Length: 173
Image 1: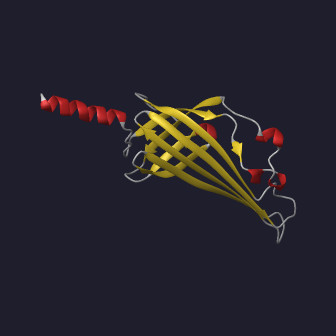
Image 2: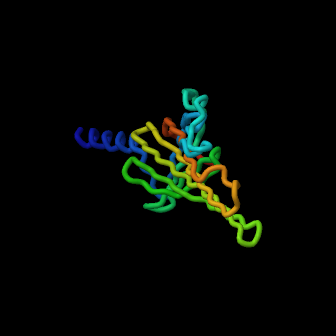
């Protein structure tokens, strides 16, 4: 009888923890804040428009994403609607994904504009429950006056959701 109880406990532990190993993946269904929250640095002179500052966003948009492991230490987040596939890592139930895109433009000799977009996603999976935050950090530097709308801007999207059980991926989500 003890062996049966131990087997059941191990099976329950496996089902309630989301351990993703090489060749495995987890599909997450999330509800994300529909309108990203922008930092003050995204606005002219660093002042948030009072009409925006008093806004409250409780309506969320549904979305799906997948996490898969390419080896024991490297994880990938595939978030199609955000147009990103980002490399990351796992520490217990916490996943962290980070990637930077850099766009350099040199329209004429001696002129240069560099725009960086950093994608930073934190996800915690506890059993089937998912919580997380998606930060997009943008920066712009230019030798050309008035080209950059801001030096830096951070937008934040919080989300909650669940791990979807029994899903077979045939193509990207």
